[in-house]
Amino acid sequence: MRLFSVRRLVLLVLLVAVVVGVYIKMDTSTRADEPQSRRGPQAVPVAVASVERKSVPVRVEAIGYVEAFTSVQIKVRVDGQIVEVNFKEGQEVHQGDVLFKIDPRPYEAALRQAEAAAARDRAQLERARAQDRRYKELLDKSFVSADGYAQIQTNAQTAEAVSKASDAAVENARVQFDYTTIRSPINGYVGKVLLQRGNIARAADPNAIALINQVHPIYVSFAVPEQRLAEIRSRMKSGLLAVDAVPSDSNGKAVSGKLAFIDNAVDQTTGTIKLRAVFENKDNALWPGQFANVSMRLYDQSDALVVPARSVQTGPDGQFVFVVKPDLSVEVRPVTIARNDGDSAIVASGLQKDEQVVTQGQLRLAPGSKVTVRS
Image (cartoon, rainbow, N blue to C red; front, top):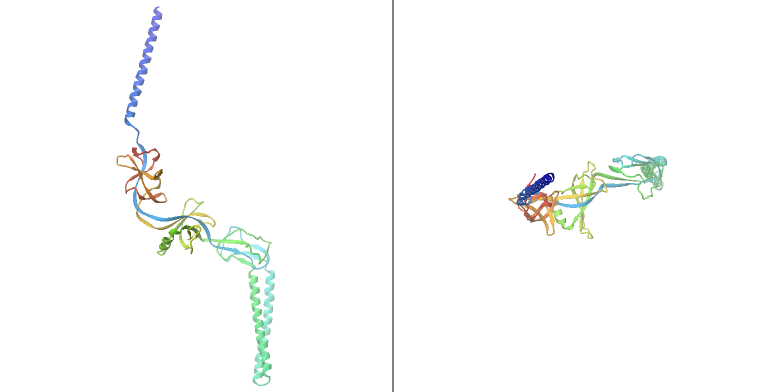
């Protein structure tokens, strides 16, 4: 009986100890949670930027395509077999470089034949002139009749005409012979060879045997709305407009050039006017057939309100920004954006200079939220 009483006493003490421990833990947790509920939501860390007033360029943006400055189709002008191709496809060539050679032997023989005929006719001309001089002396002495001298004079004039025709035939044969050597008319890059060595070239064939594109300098053509035409023409009167082009497959590096051409008519189907800019393209950043993002600078707008473009948000009622007030709470401010220029947005209305706008952390914000500014 005593052993049973002791066991009951031990169990009772353990039970009391467990109940006291649970109560102490619950009380401690409740007290720890009380300050949290009194503090409310924590401040949201954000990055901010100041509204600046500065000069920014006004640009016209468009999509353009790259065109060769000069494009020349190489065609044969005499018939014959191609015996030499002195370049590789895609190679850079210079004006005067020999590209093709056509078998020159038939044309060389024709040239020699023409030269021989010309020499013969010159000899006959000299003989006719000598006779003319001699008969002129005899006529003066009345040893020959006037009709006889007239015939000799006619023979001399005929021989002179024949000699001139022979000289022209020699020149024509020389030109035909020169056509057997095809040279590059410009500096540029040659494309695919359409007739290889051993093929027969025909002067009557309308197809080219190669194409050369000049890329130094090079053109970029683009179209802008016709509403900008008057302003562009006005700005061009004071000097050439600067144009930047970024090829669509580049790393974003812009190439600088100048506006060189305004088309003489507006395209009525699209309501746009075609423009063309010229670029030196020394490093071959632009290549014929590429598409490029074009930005043409018209003028500089002074005293423009500028904010980072990433600070501008779009909601159901339009664009807005979060403005940080002096008490480090945020206000939702509707804004009107005139345009974007790179990473900057030009503000037409809604903000004042030196106000602070949130550039990072907007997703966690609501009107009146407290913030902490981080660098």
